[in-house]
Amino acid sequence: MSSTHEPARATGDRPLSGITVVDLTRVLAGPYCTMILADHGARVIKVERPPGGDDARRYGPFAAGRSAYFASVNRNKESIALDLRSGPDREVFERLLAEADVLTENFRPGTMERLGYGWPELHERFPALVYGSVSGFGRAGSPHRDRPAYDMVVQGMSGMMSVTGVPDGPPTRVGVSIGDLAAGLFLTAGVTMALLHRARTGVGAQVDIAMLDCQLALLEYAIGRHLATGETPGPVGTYRPGVPPPFGTFRTADGYLVIAAGNDKLFGALCAALGRPDLEQDERFVHGEARKDHETALRHAIEAVLAGHGTEHWCAVLDAAGVPFSTVNTVDRMLADPHVRGRSMLVDVGAGGALPTAVGTPIKFSDVADLTRVTAAPELDQHRARILAELAGDGDA
Image (cartoon, rainbow, N blue to C red; front, side):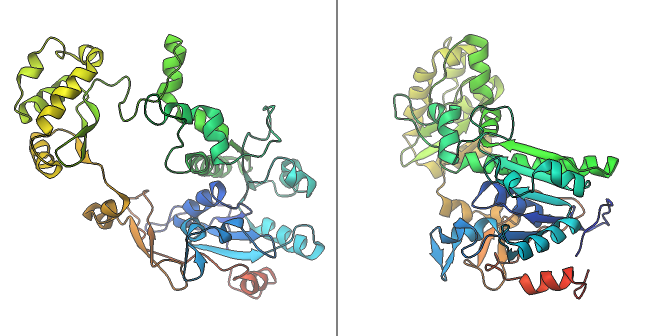
């Protein structure tokens, strides 16, 4: 098995080359974390429960008979099916752990303990192992510890849905699974920190991530505003409270445009670009706090000008003026933008993939080539023979 407890990285190596992750996670939060680790060089061995494996294998949409959902977060991984209630499979699992640097799991708290793989037991047997856990409410300290949770549960419970959407609208889910994705990102950060700590001390640690905690951590301004003023924030559409307007989406003759002129200098540049330098001198708009107090009037004045031309025209005008702006893209339009290929944010997928391309990694390093091709998400138990051969000493280390 390829694994090391010594930090080593040659120029050009991916940062996590030499790290082996045994991955018990499934669906989204945990697999998103281990995909990031795999993208940056870690060997990720996905341990799936037979006979069906990860539930996400059965989530649509499907392409070439495979789940595109599963494929989106399980590239660059290997798969072995193990029943952790079976003696022979437990023996294989424990031999994997003996060679691993990291174990990740997203079971409900108590499950690993019932299997005999709780943190105290594993830390005693494998003291250098980093143990990354993600659950709805964390492993300790929460009265909700034993409740099941999904993305929607923590979006609702955290208050995230209460500040998303338009004023007077119903509670609105963020358009992506931010409850899962944030937990996966924080787990990635925690595991990486624990590996750095181990490099210094030689000792592994448990990383305990609660999905609900991660949503609270993302509510920055909403929580800060409440603590400072006692107000209960609500949804504000595309307006950004706290930042001087204009800062949001504005209607043009044929669509919408994002304008982010969040300080006096940028506001002056915007007024000049729109042919309305008088707005900068209007006492209602002369400084940021005044513009906050008269945000609706300012919006009407700006949109009256924007109505004279289409979005493409105003993009050129604002670009020339140095005013931060963007179109409001659909996904297909964004993927057609040359930025995506220029930054390797679409990568080729090897043979057997549900889709021929996938989203790349946004983490770039000065001395490591951009990831441009990935291995397709594995079939269930695809790598059993090779992994068992390695454990038996018959494969390459």
